[in-house]
Length: 83
Image 1 (cartoon, rainbow, N blue to C red):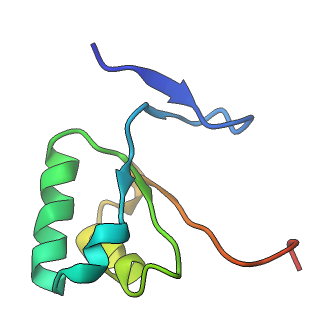
Image 2: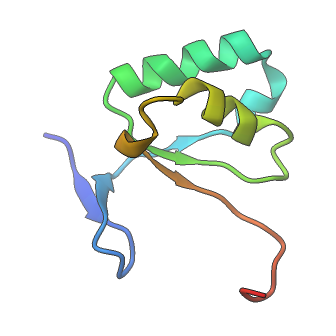
Image 3: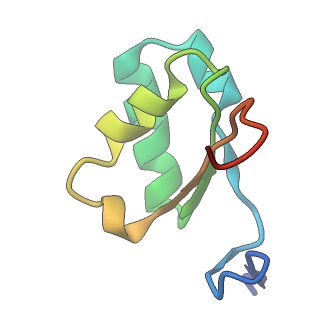
């Protein structure tokens, strides 16, 4: 059975396991998109990335064009506040 969790106080429920995008920085665009499509086809809907992961955000964008509303993407930054 797939375990679901709620992300903090957002009310957003996702599968407990997420896809960490750090390793995508070591792949070319075509391979990364293929990997991301396979993850999506396997039921993955929560993806974690960061600007520090070189071009992983761009790879996620390319992979999920047209289906973005079906996934959740978490990212990180060095920002200290919302400003």
